[in-house]
Amino acid sequence: MQSSVFGQKFLKDANAELKVYWPLPENELSSLESQTLRQLNGATDCFGKMIGSSFIAKEKVADFFVRKIYVIRYEK
Image (cartoon, rainbow, N blue to C red; front, side, top):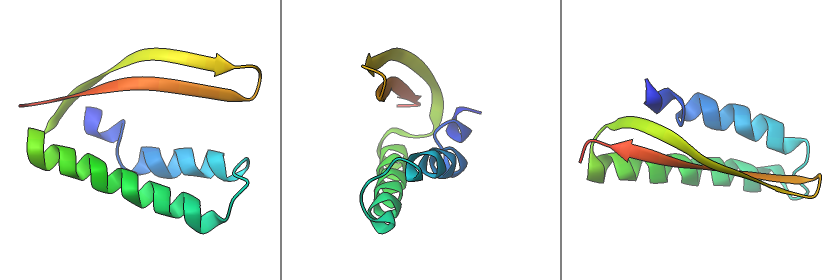
């Protein structure tokens, strides 16, 4: 269930939204997506299956930046 929240589809959808605003080359955003997937897979290798997530906070800077913070829970 929760693995889909932070899975490949989620990252592709998020990157599609970011492309509109991303001021740097598109390959940089693709690289960020690949790195994020590798890190999530590495965490799964170390800590087991993803069993849940919790939304922690949403921070807004003026009217142009939003940061959402989540915690991902694993089996181990």
